[in-house]
Image (cartoon, rainbow, N blue to C red):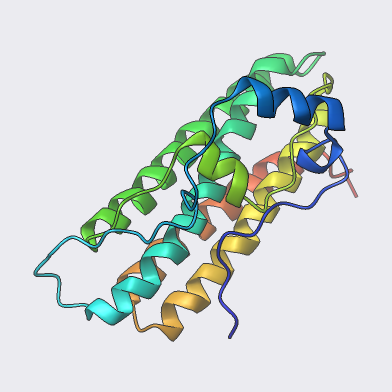
Length: 204
């Protein structure tokens, strides 16, 4: 199957593609020049007695770094919802979104630590996340509980989809431990999606 790495997000909600030429030009003049090839620099592989073949680890690590970028993105979206939700359901949703954030933070650590266990470097800077995450940008002008529930359910379902892509990739590469880790993560995200979507679903 096709493997997915470093795919820039595509969305219509004011993400990178929505920036004005003026803002882009301003950013270019204000920031120092990024060294050529920085984003494409080959990852360093540290020596390890882990018996997963080096050839496999060289394929697994960048795929896990892709999942890491998306998981960090999801965590920031959970906090965005937690900080900004308003309305009659504030208390319940404020707590729910923070509980989700805590779990997702744990998923971030699991993925990053797996990368390092395999001799790789966990790539989790803001720049890397912004360049790689395929999760739809979180709208910054939301306020009501219903709006945040809809947006966060989009983010959770989007990440769950990429996690399941990762499971198939790990299975293809015969990395059962990474596949098992992503299975646990996707199961957890599905549970949080259920909790969030329950606020949308009408009683029958």
